Length: 159
Image 1 (cartoon, helix red, strand yellow):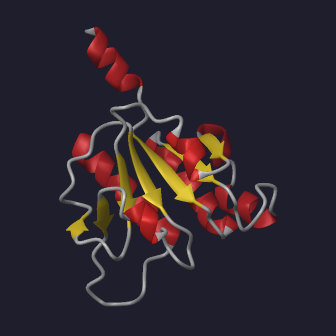
Image 2 (image 1 turned 30 degrees about the horizontal axis):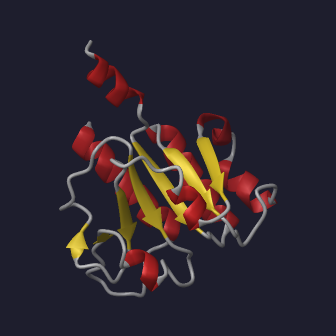
């Protein structure tokens, strides 16, 4: 195997990033999805709960051992860890491009905002933004559902 192939396979499938998540149950469910896909989970403070919360423990069950969970104090702190070739996709109901139209690469960052308000305008305006279709209407999908759908699309594309 070439060095490039070895390096590419060492990357996680993707990195799911939750910006200021508010609900322990959603984060626990996203962690379970990350565990089964081999994706990293990045959490950006502040959170609306504690990682020792019973609801988080109930949702994540025993999957937390299989998740690489990385905490960041702020968006700026996460940015400082990004390599020049890192790709961050912002997910928003305000985006025009569908999440299935993006061509993902192993190790891409999938960024989601807090449940009650989504990503701040300044952040989604600075990044390529994608949306999940909602043909039946509604304000937005549940955070865990949206993150799961996006992560599984990366899996579908990359196999």
